[in-house]
Image (tube, rainbow, N blue to C red; front, side):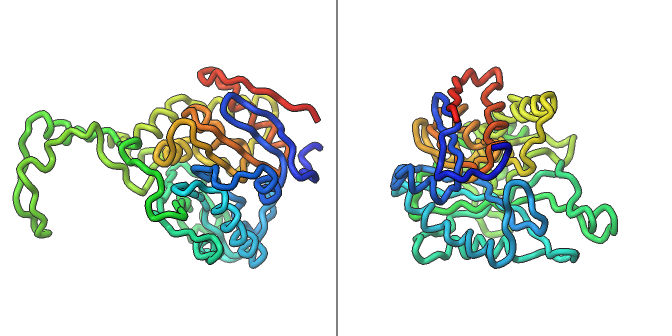
Length: 332
């Protein structure tokens, strides 16, 4: 197929100990697989509404808005009664103008407001990556009239007010000052200027970490500042799996998918919103960050992708030595 969009309904490209990767359009494949009420978490980064066409097949304008909104009902239908949808979406810009488009925000709003889906916004997150390349280049590095676009929007949605979630699974390590406070057993209690009253023992319980923020900082801004990623993000970032994938792609002359979801982001939400054995679905699988992280965390997973080249390169993730996963390729 040499990277052409798949023409069939769906084909199983490969399977692993915990998951399956299908080639096909997500709308058709999801219906064919009969996943109704079986998916605990849909975790995906859909094609962004970009002005320039990419190989991964992005739409733009009203065409994109209509298509994206229509997915809400389908995605909601496969969720368990306490399941979640997490969508990462970057910013969009008006063509040939130093002006941000509202299309990405309108798309998210229209998606969650789809009356046939019954969704609600549980919480909005920001995924901040100070290491991102300067973009949009025309306005940042050439004309020098805009700053670097360095974050993406992450919306957590559900068809329930109380989806499965536990923030104790994504705790951040305590700061040095908090560790000192716990050791000494003393702190300045009493009434604050904000009129909050802090009890004498209010901060003396050791919860083995602090509650995560909804700004997910993938790399530290200040090198002198202690990096306090949530444990789930920190552990997976330390595996260097992303380095393994990009390094292997380079060695084999493969151009990796240009819009890969950060491993730390995927691992955070998988740990936060699912248990071992739960099913995680990525309708726009790409290089299969979601499936890889689900595999490491012992969750069942299904990924769907319309481009065979991206499907083939995604198998490289499962060659990562520490994973020790069995990959079975299907014949075409």
